[in-house]
Image 1 (cartoon, rainbow, N blue to C red):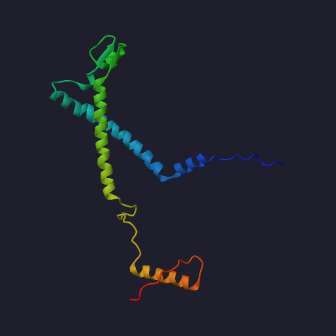
Image 2 (image 1 turned 180 degrees about the vertical axis):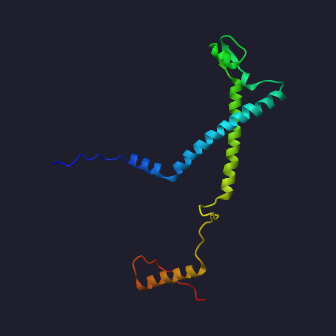
Image 3 (image 1 turned 30 degrees about the horizontal axis):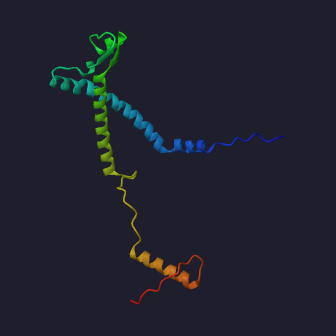
Length: 165
C-alpha cells in the first residue's frame, strides 16, 4: 500500500492562518463595523445639519444640487438629470464627500490622540518601560563575569582591571 500523496502547504498560507488567528484581526473587524456605523452618522450630520447651514450662509444654495451638465438636458435636480441620461459633474456631491472625509479624519485624529495618551495595558496599569538593573545587580554581574575570567570558563569576557578604591 502506497502512502497518501503529501501536499506541501505553502508558506504564505501558514502566514495567513497565523495572521487570521491573531486577536488584532478581530479588533480590525470590529473597527470596520463600528466605522461603517460611524460613517452613516457622519453622512447624516453633513447632509442634514452642515449643508443646510452652509447653504443658508451662502444664500440658500443646496450643495447636493450643485452640478454641471456636460451633455444632455438639465432638469430640476441632480437625480432627475441623471435619470434623464445626461452626463453630469456632481460638484455638490463631491463637496459633501470632502466634508464627510474631513469630519471622519478629525474624529479619528482625536480618538488616536486620546488612545496614545492612555496607553493602558489590559490589566489597567499604565505601561512603563522595564527598569534597568539596580546598582546591586550591576555589581553582582561584574563579580560573576570576573569569576568566570579567573576560572577560565568558556564565554568569559576579558575583564579590565579595576582601579583600587
